[in-house]
Length: 145
Image 1 (tube, rainbow, N blue to C red):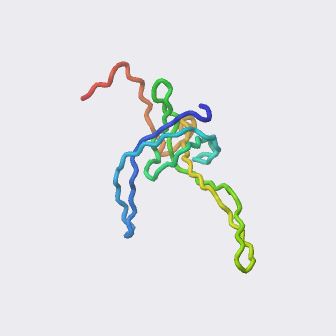
Image 2: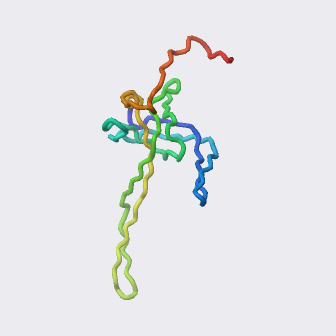
């Protein structure tokens, strides 16, 4: 896996919080596409692991969605689990009032990126939510019941 690889994910979003505090699940389909823009160390359980930072925001409800890369076919490389918000100072603006008072404002750019656990780090996790069965590959086309 290299920086700049094109990746995508799809899943369901749409947890709606109304003013009464009630959660409504709308189950809207969502497709996100971007690229791997960084590798970060992040504590996702049992210590720090390397995670992918992707160029798109992980929408609420998409945690647990697959992160796929296309390489002749779709390849599972990770699982989305959240977003990261960062700020960068773009510029300083100086304003002078009629009375001659100076005020300096910062202009900031806000970046929101997605985070995904790598498939390798998922294999190291333990606990109730990480129990899985690895199935052997199919020897032929799937059979519908």
